[in-house]
Length: 375
Image 1 (cartoon, rainbow, N blue to C red):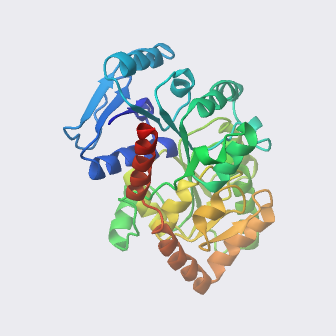
Image 2: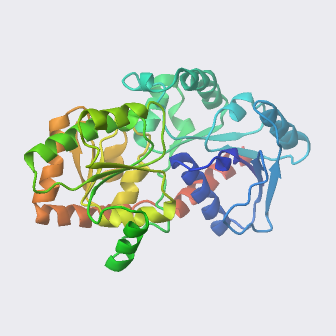
Image 3: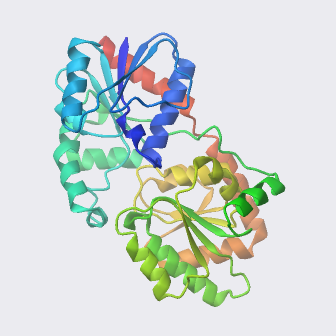
């Protein structure tokens, strides 16, 4: 079987969750599948930091959208003659596709959820509304990263239940609890970061609820002046990030809150492993990879009681109403002040994180490929 994969999203700098997911899927497919032929499509010839086996081929077309998608479709039909197309990050290509059996991976539907869709830029909403519905309708199978996202898919697009398969994303192999205190201290010193801190990791955008994190942290400081750990906000700038910088200034928290910007992936385990608390009360997630990452490194987690986040965290987090600033503040206080409870969360998180595997994801994905190929 010839399997084509749209990989052009891997060409952006500073990967977010979708790109990290695709990269880990590729690594696991390489590890477990020596029989099928794979064709990876890029815009530019991308050198991936993985060893490419003989049954993998990379093709690139240096064209803008939608010419790139047209070139890929031409190659799929007339040259490569792929038998299955997997599209894990975008929707334009499957929306344009014709008869080739396609598997679309659905990470979230943030631009369709009423409570958060207005936090996106208008051009993003326009593009998603144009292509997502068409892509999902045309796909032979839809891989949803959570039951919550599956429910949203059925609710907003009326996609048949039996067409959607839930496969949970896995945990990165290089994410584990680091117990070497000196190694952590060296990394923190190298990047000019404090020795102890509260932590958020994610793109700086309204959906991540960073405004309420900042406000809850301010209230925490007012009531706990002797436990004034700084707050690290780690992640690249997203849309409307300026509002968060202004809020920090308005609340006079410039000395307490550190915007680190994007940090290399290999640094994150050191931060998670040292964090006093990992705070992630997102308004909506399709899955919530940072929660899984934090748990796998032994960080005690605060997250939202909404969307997919309870599926990810299980019994290993404090769940809060993301719109309730006081609840977020009380959760921070609970973890900081109760060492026994904190240790319990850390242990539960380590156990919970073991339930998620990219190899399992890849095996279930191959079952889907074979199913639609044999039809």
